[in-house]
Length: 342
Image 1 (spheres, rainbow, N blue to C red):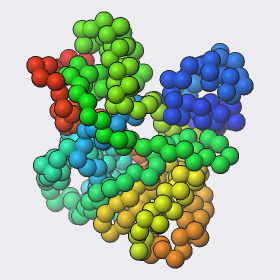
Image 2 (image 1 turned 90 degrees about the vertical axis):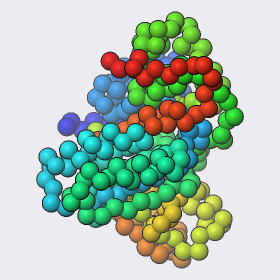
Image 3 (image 1 turned 90 degrees about the horizontal axis):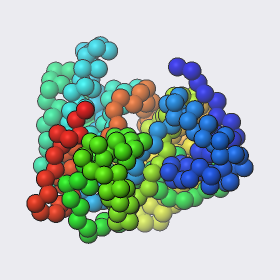
Image 4 (image 1 turned 30 degrees about the vertical axis):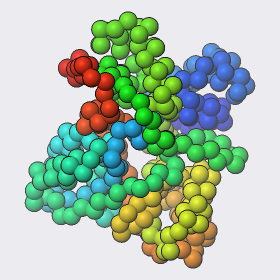
C-alpha cells in the first residue's frame, strides 16, 4: 500500500467536507482559498486512492434498541480459518463493523439491534465458530460522546459534536424510502439516476425523497471517513474503567473527547470497562502521548485500561439489513429488497 501524505491544503479541504461531504465545491473552494477545479481534483484523488469514503449519517435513534461492541478471542486458527469466520460474521443482519485486532482478542464487532430478540440472534449466531471460540466479551453502548474525523484536520481548538444518535423523530416512511436509505448507506456516491433505475422511479422522485429524509432528520448529514492506513496512521481502541462515574465526570469526559484531535470515536459502555475511545496515531509512541493526556487529566478517576490495535477493517455497513423493518412503515407499501440486488 502506498502511503499518501496529506498536506495543509488537503487537511483544509477535509476539515470543510468532514461533516458536509455534499457541500458545493465552490463553497469549499472559497473556504480553503483554492480554485474549484483544484478542490475537485484533490477530492477525486483522495477518493480514487481510497484515502476517504463518504457515508450518510443516518439517525439510528429511529431504528434501534441498542448498540454493542463484541470482542472475540479465537484459538487454534490460522489466517484462512480466521477469514472464513469473518465471512460468516458478515452474514449477521445487524453487524455495522468488523475488524481484525491485535491484543487479548482477535476480532472486534460493532452491531446494533432493534430489540432483545435481535441481541440473542447475534450472540447465538456465534455458535458456528465452535471449538475455535475461546471467549468473548460483550459491551452495551449507552452513550456516544464523539463520532467524527473533523477535529483531526485542524490545529485550532475545535469542539463541535457529531454523533449518529440525534433526537428520535416520530415520523413515518414508506418502503421506497427504506430502499433508498439502504442503497445510500452502502455507497452515498450512487447517483440519483442509479437509484432511480434500481427502484424504477424518476430521478426527480429520488431527489424529492432524499430531501424529505433530510428534512425529517432521518438523514442527519453526509460525512467523510478517513482510511487510517492510507495516510500512515493506525487505529488503537482504548478501553478504560473510571471510578465514581457521575454527571460531573461524564461531562468532563465529553468535553475532553470532543476537543482531543487524536480521538475519533468515544463511547460510554457497561461492563468491565465503562468507556472506550478510538485513537488514530502515527505510532505506538503517538498513541501513548494520547493515553498520557487522559491519565494526566483523569488521574484520580482512571482505575484501569487496556487497548487493542486495529489491523484491518473487514466490513462496514451503516444501515444493516436487520434494521430495515424496524422503522414504522406506512401501510400497503411493499419493501422489495430484491430490487437492491445487482
